[in-house]
Length: 511
Ligand code: AMP
Image 1: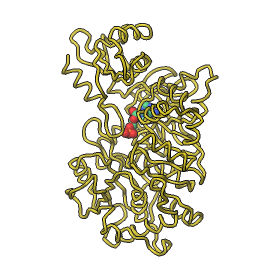
Image 2: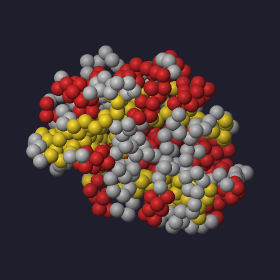
Image 3: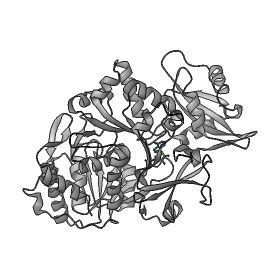
């Protein structure tokens, strides 16, 4: 089992159609992609890299990223994709931890040499041109034999707290993840196209696997990132287009559609499916998204440790407004995906009844093999095959999981548990509020008090008194923020997740 076989298979059955696109420009067919990846594999092998060795990909989104990723797999190597926005010092830490031998970079993200490598290749240079030139017949370059439990991807966690850990993902993990997409997320045919707007080094790049399995097209936007106008335009030309979008990106797509006067029919001309996940999607946001862009959303919940696969909320469940519990479902992350079991447990790992809140546990073939060179962290995270996600939530009687927060984000005020997300959901429905994040700040009387950081919409700012009245009408008194801090923007990491640790520090400093 080697993920490189997915490429060889398509190069045999569908060799010639343009498959990879650089913006609107055709970049490679399956056969060209295979010839380039096989060429890369051959030269990496000749340079002495052996199956299991690690190769870093530190690149902005680029069509060549796909060729290098599959080239590494073709040679049996382990890819270590690194977010293009990381500081070189952070990348050097990862290189050291992963004991990576080579790195492929784009010059914009790594203008200098990174320490700790045997070799660094600028993926766009003339030197790379010879390294990456295609072989005449990819069939002549054998794909390295890999077992299902061999590593394919070392996935460094986004590290919102502490040092990132290397999540070990195997060929089996990623193959199962790819196949699951067709059952739990979306049907894909060779006519479809996936556009990589979020960083390919993270979850977004993994969408290449199911789309290659289905022989679909792969589109890297010319901007290399998230430009809603560009994405709508690409969709009009290359439809049917799908994309993965964190909730902040969904919000930008919807803002753009609204500002440009685009409605659900226009959205349908550009997008077949928008898969969202990676961070909480607030009820107010998804309802607005459905109104503006129509029923083209599917939600996934997963984490680096079980990529893309824990639960999914299907297009049908999202759009089924006639269901009596539609709003509850819309606020949930859906039901367990097909290859995994999901349960909610107390601290001893005992199942909790429906409706009770505990930690979310996941078991199945997508769960990581462990953390790289970190048996202590592995033993804490995976017990008897169950992954302890660190997420807190509850299951309903139908198996829909609703996430509350990360366990570390929970706050306790006057002895009562408060889930920041619940307060955020309410504040987001208040007039004039664009974004909000709630954290706890230490308080001598209550232990902790609720502090809300609010980004206002353009126009008159909502007053504290108005927000307080809004909360009083909707949630228990003790959950109301004791303090509001109005900010221009929320601090976020490279994947659009709000940095609650930073906000907690700010809230503490203001106490
Ligand atoms: P990462 O490993 O960086 O992908 O982060 C995974 C974490 O993001 C999960 O453990 C959750 O806390 C959060 N997350 C992922 N998907 C969702 C979702 N659909 N809704 C809410 N939070 C999510």
